[in-house]
Picture (tube, rainbow, N blue to C red):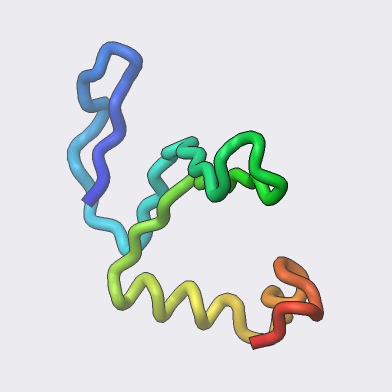
Length: 78
């Protein structure tokens, strides 16, 4: 279920049942501390929540699109 809110924090419409919801987080995680030769951070921009039906629909849309290689390249074949 999702609810849209206005700038004033009040709902702009009634809650709605959905199969997919994207939540903006902008969360950064430090994998190695600053100063470490392997210093590295990783940013999670969004978290996606899906129902089982939503996951099935998402996977069905990806079939035949070769998105794994487009997103992660040949070096990360599964």
